[in-house]
Image (cartoon, rainbow, N blue to C red; front, top):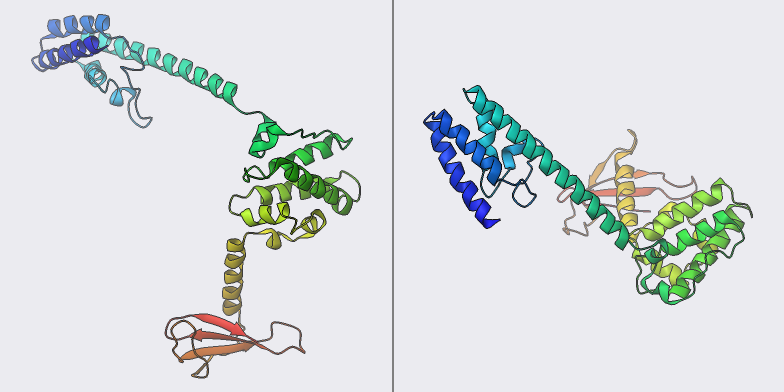
Length: 299
């Protein structure tokens, strides 16, 4: 290949000079030599960037693709036709190679891809895990889905994961599905699986596997309760901001030095009050620091 590249480079130099000097016969002769020398393999040819002509990034080692591509507009029809034919032939050859390479790579990945049961906790293959124990095809599939939801917890004991999955499935079947495989049951299983698989929510997986949250409690938890600590804090921040933004026109702000900002320790603040709970409960006071815009509330 090195010899072919070196010869191609030399012919490229000669071709550039011949085309610049308008020596048409020499250009034709050099193109014929290139047809014999150049073997458009994937190693020699790099088919180009989609937004550019295919030959713009071709033959990176020799730049012969660019040189021959330019000759497609040569003044002599014999040269331009030969250049067009060469470009077309090279392109077809390389695209065929790329398709064959992609097919081989796909087959290789499929051959090495893990099976469904391998997509569970890493030590699952060392124990006897049976997903066909519930005498119902849908329930068995849901049990397997819940089990695989703990795959981001690779150090977990497979039997403990299996026991947790059984506990959750049973609770969903009894409490959500009312002992039937209905739409609510299947929706709950899918929702719990997504929450347990969330890579940003390891504490939920830990609490379930440690027994802090059992199946009956898990299936009745609201979506905000299932969320990670970071997401809960984010939602609380948005809620507080919305409360500040949603104060009615009658809730006029007043300035006072009665409150000290916990952030900058200044006492220049604005505040207003709003009834956010039942009528017999005290009003909530919303305070904003004039100095640093820090916001807090208290009852």
